[in-house]
Length: 250
Image (cartoon, rainbow, N blue to C red; front, side, top):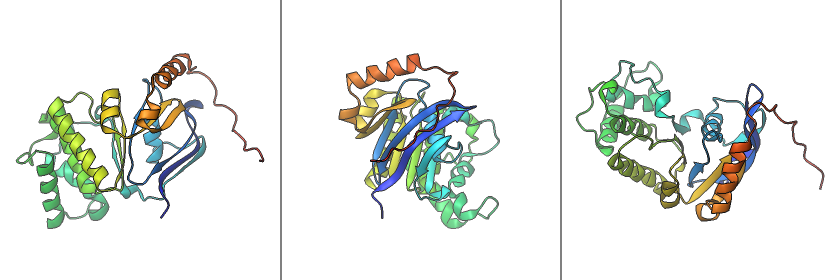
């Protein structure tokens, strides 16, 4: 098996031909725990959406060799409609869709796994609660329980600790650490640089273009952070996508 869990090769992603991620290349190793950091509008969430196939590259390639069911994805909370009439248990069971199918019968084994996942995130007894009645922290625990049920090899988290309380953040960071200990590859978009430095050994720092990708100590330097801020401030939102880069002969 290749050491690489994910490879980005000269990746550019654009909206209406305006680049949101620009010529990014690098590799995630199997079992790595990586933060994606950068200023607002740096292309962090866009990068995750491209990895799951929601956005197509304008240029370059994304290589991971995984089936969609092997990739767990947690979008930003603001992107999820919590008014949909569904309870906690059924939300968690959505993590088993690759086994039961969209309209398949839920097995006893899946129910047991869902109950175990709710126990793992501290939500025993919440099975029949409507998701719309939950606090922000409780709902995020439900989404982590759904990921536990999916049992994915690559886990992508988009701002998983935004607007939740400190206790929930601590508990969910514990689950992230467990995933890492199990050899899963975990990537999280984060705004809190203290969380990045404390809990994530690898960092991809981006400001539309790649600033640094490697050990957090080497990437999250004052010079790199200043460079990221400066690049974000001067980025032209209306610029046309650049011409494709061509490889030159050695």
